Image 1 (tube, one colour):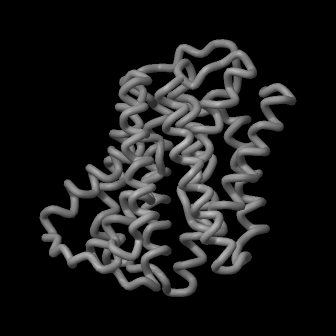
Image 2 (image 1 turned 90 degrees about the vertical axis):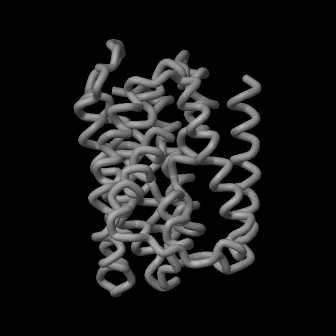
Length: 267
C-alpha cells in the first residue's frame, strides 16, 4: 500500500485533475504526470524510474470519468456515432500498441513524446478559434484505420488518453460542435481501455519490487485512490463556473504546461 504521504499526494492530484477537467475539459494526465515528476523525488522516487507505472496508473485511473462523460453524452444524443465507429477500431489497436511500446522506450524518448503533445495542446488552446475555421479534410474510409492507429499509439506513448489528437481530428473533420465533446470522450474511452489491456500485459515486465498490488504495470491501490478522488471532484465541479472563470483557468493551465516543460527539460 502507498504511504500516508503518497495517499495525500494522489488525493490532491485527483482533486486537481477532476475539478479542472470538469470545468475546461482538459486531459487529466497533462496535470497528473508533471505533478508526479515534481513530487515523487520527495518520497525518494523519480519519474525516470517509475515512468511506465506512473503513466499506466494515471491513464487507467481516469477511465471511469471518461466513461461517465461519454455515457452522459450518449444519453443526450451528443455523440457522432458514425465517426466514432469509423475511427475507434484503429484507435483501440493503437492504444494496445502504444502501451506495449511505452514499456520498451527510454525516459528520454517519453519526454520527447510527452513534450510534443504538450506543445500541441498549448497551440490548440491558444488558437482554438483558428482551428474552428480550418478547412474540412475529406478523410477516405480506407485511411480511417491507419489514422486511428497513429492517434492511439501516439497518444498512449505520450502518456495520454487520446483526447488531444482526437480533438484535432474532430476539428479538421468538421464534426458538429454539439457532438464533438461526446465523440472525443468516446475516443478517450476506447484508447484508455485498450491501453489498460496493454499495461496489464506489458511487452517488458516492470522491475519494481518494493511495492505490492500490481497488475502488470498498473499499481492498483494508487489507481483506485487517484481515480476515486478525480471522479468525485469531477462530479462536484460539473456545470459550474462562468465564461470568465473558464478563460482564466485555461490561461493558468497553459502557463502550468509551459512551466512543466521548462522544468522537465532543464532538470
